[in-house]
Image (cartoon, rainbow, N blue to C red):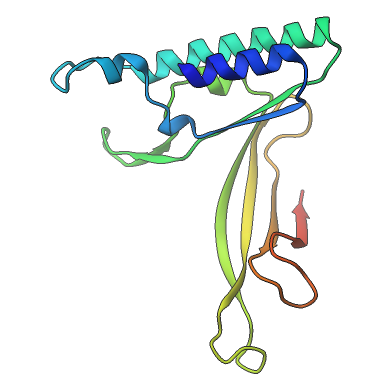
Length: 171
């Protein structure tokens, strides 16, 4: 709850154009903290996230009107396995409200490690990772596209740590 309040106040100042909240799945509702372990309530996190998203949408719209600042809010989440049905399926914690409210929803997955050959590095240490992405939803562009890029994890081949050194877009 406090994270959404802080982000709301930061958006309304108009000083920032990009705000990132990591991670929605790790956010703990105040009700969960205050109650004992025996008290069980269904959907507390989903209600908290949906209320927070409505609050942030209001703040972003206010910032656009009042200060003419374009604000982007990135909410990071993780995928968990739901084992409650007949088959395991991937879900994201926090309910369905975030899926309806988002402008762009992108799913990232680590595809492969990038290692040097034995001639370049006898230890064959990992120097990078290939990351694939899938655009699940987009209100501003074409959805259902996939792509891949690589990130350098250490200084090698004239690249520096954190550099994106290849990219491939697959329409």
